[in-house]
Length: 426
Image (cartoon, rainbow, N blue to C red; front, side, top):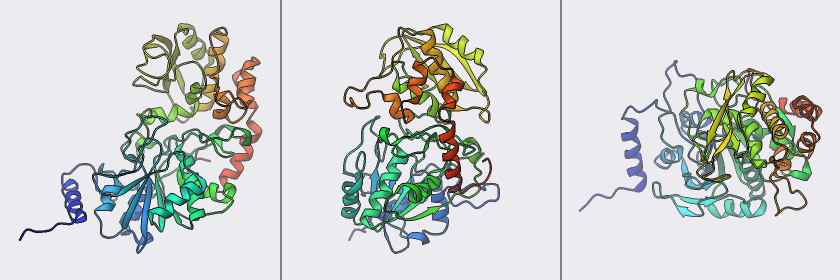
């Protein structure tokens, strides 16, 4: 008679084999030299005691990895210490197969056999019904954020918390670092009129918080019905710590966020999605390469003359392979962060917008959204109000534009301070 092996037993054997290859550091390695731990590592080190006896689902994507490069879902599915029964995929999907604005739909994951539910653009009762139908008791969240308000994973977090509360489910956030560090918040604040999936609530454009800290803020400040929330905190992370110093590998959280450097500039240069310039999609350096067919060497010269802290600019020419200006030669700049501690991504992005409009007034244009005539300018949705666009159109300089949100940012910083978990920075 042949031997029967369950899927879980086979997965467990496979996990041991991978761990034994010597790739990276074991997620449960307790050597003193490795002091940093993500939330999921802390959960695993405690043998999943926090969710023992519960049916668990997890909202995650390819960034839900351990230091040895194994994905947490693959490890959990192979363990008899946690009853993982469902995965919930955000924009781009659980395994990351979809481009911007796409998802994977419902399917059974080939590697683990787990059902994967599509949560992209689902919220409220519709998402609560998905959570209820999955049969889970507890929903965990573990996705690497990029630190910008218009990066949609934090609103997947918000929507998932709201839906979990409606469904009567417990919610657990497995915390990860903010790649921009958590020293401070930058930029304008979202206003209710411009609330969308790229900015649901009144937080700053670069929030300077971890997803765990944001979850605490969301629960206390914005959710009408708070959820039963637990944050599994990182160990050994300080909010002024650079991502590279954590020892974690960087995994693309989305197809156009290839490096830590991309995340550091994104909350500023991401605003070029609201213009007729290419934001570098279709190149190997999205959000670092910015340009258009009409731009030339004068832009880099003007930007370098400003002496922006922590930033330098190089004249660059590139031809996007998709998105705006596809297969068309663009002139422009490549942004370099020369000092991350001094760098202000939003101030830098505003200076870039101001100078490009000044240099090329007949060619520069704001992206117009014909599907939303009440709020037609995409830049307003990204920055949270009409203030940035109208100030730049009125000819104001970077400092004057920044002064327009200073009061609201100060108020947000005071609110934000109540929900910070980690020390270091302000």
